[in-house]
Length: 471
Image 1: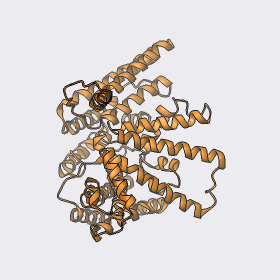
Image 2: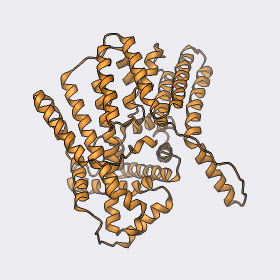
Image 3: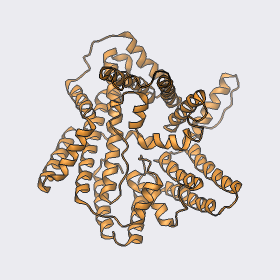
């Protein structure tokens, strides 16, 4: 049930009304939200309901086992079981086929031909997100940062809460569980902001991301040799805007939907292409994942506590695994590796020269441009299905050809609109959102209706799934 469909609008309207009717009866509200979330998830496959229920239940029980354990080795054993279970589930559904194919390719290269049946394993939607969320809860309990949660119903709802279930953001238990434990409070200003977020998310997804995907990006990346270097470069910029508009659009709808149900999610994007270096980029892009990797992978590996060389290695390892998290493909690993090396180089530069661009605006602009170009090149590996596809794009770029009969003015206009929206200063955007909440209700309604009409006019008849649904 995609957020951009009429089916979701009907589903959410019912969820909104019933949730607020039950707002003062905590148990009834939670049971409804849990049932609605399981119904929402079942639209992607009823069989996977058992998986999310089993994983949630196991982690809830294991957290209490850790809380009761008195000996350190017992606590470590329960934690190890949690990690093995969650990563094992993730590995089976997401990486088993990839692992077998990689092993067979390696054996074939060595001259050993081992015939094995082709694995066909359906990937549960959102498995990377809900396993990370549930596992982080047990880790927090082990670290003593959270007590074992007393309510089984609240915990099941935390994992399955439908606005963030299938593509994030990865909401921490310390942020969401307390909100589920207390009755929601209706605030008109926040409701206005939530509706504006949803409208903005729909516009980003349907009017910008999908339009660029169907009319530029997919065509060029599917057959790059038929296009000039200039057209390939514009398609790379188009993909950067597409994936940002697609994922941040989903996040806007998710945050807005949750807010209308009385739940606040943390922000997940902060204009990442405005970043002045690669460290700044990862403070702005998919914030919930980057902070999760920092807290549960980079820091446990040693972080920056064991000398410069180990810090660089930890950064690269974290990003390699972060790339692999996105999917069972070596192109994702290379994408993560590129960012890991860039983060290590950035840190080495800062250790040697300091932040030399802080007080030089022209250097900051140049650094922002260079960072964006690096991100564009790395996105090629993220978007390409194979290294051959990526090599074809780079091969066309090397031709330096500039003819551009395939660059439709309408596509360029949408691309310019996407870039322009992205580079609006964050402070100005916040002021505009705040100003919207102070307008009379009728004016807000007319403005939102106008946005929806514009979205309907620009939207394609062909449905394009959200990019991060595959992760």
